[in-house]
Amino acid sequence: MFDPASLLDRARRKEIEGDEAGAEADFARSAEAGHAAADPSIEVAALAGLVRIGTAAGRYKSVGAHIDAMGDRLASASVAPIARAEALAEASLVAIERGNDATARLEEAIALAAAEVPTDQSHRTQIRGLIYLAHAARLRGDYAAARDAAD
Image (cartoon, rainbow, N blue to C red; front, side, top):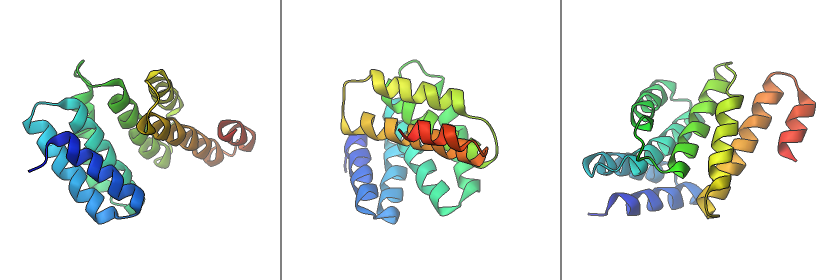
């Protein structure tokens, strides 16, 4: 049996490699293991991965449940800033897709990730946040802001 952090790392590797089914299974196991180990940072990061994969696949019902679970865990002060940033970014993308403004949450996610010691995960979270900001601007018809966010 893998520890929750190893499952999360494995899920992220599978996601990067394009194995969405394997990544989704490992994100789910990691979220369960993080919950069982009382590690809200792992649980929140794994739930964010499930939101990202579920959104890409159009499974909004399960995405909503994962966002609700993330929201409950984000209240914990022991959630690591990078896990909080990842969760805010993914929940913001769903809000954007539903036509809501999530600019403030995305800016918070980007700032949290930028304040971290540089890692692959902090860079990925910052980049996703910027891409999601550009996506939101395009949906609003603000193409100049979309270009600014992408630059």
